Image (tube, rainbow, N blue to C red; front, side):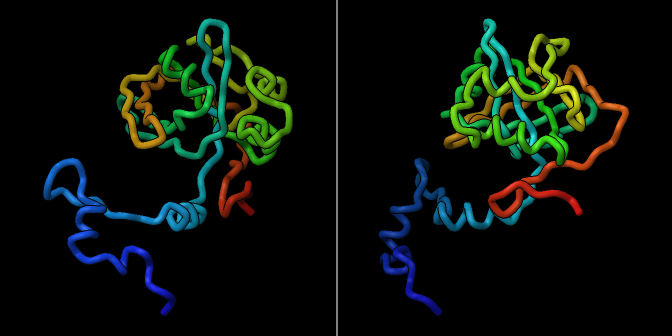
Length: 191
């Protein structure tokens, strides 16, 4: 068995005080953040670049926290860390694009993930064929699919914001490709 966790050494009353939420009687569970991150490394995710533009300033980030909410009406959910510059641009404009990357676009994923030295802000858009979509936001030609979205709802969630988006434009290229994935702390491909 290993050594007991710090929580196991607490008396029941101390543990209850530690995990009691703002509302009395409402308990939340405690999960060790490093353990949670280690667990999440086992959840493969499709890599997308989330991009936006406000008052002529473009910004973007690489993300895996994107999912479909509904087809009628077409809606996506996008989670963005509040500490990144793109969050501010998305919040100001109320617009974003989701560009699902192919396995051939790992270099673009790295640029928008901050993994390329001395590449930030507008310089991230120097790689790839970017054009303005119907909403005037950057969309990546050559991605597996690009969605132009209008933010309908904003939900604060710890360090992130969940943007509930109405899809107003979908660009699906004629050629199919394989997605770029993120798994185990690195980029991965379907074999």
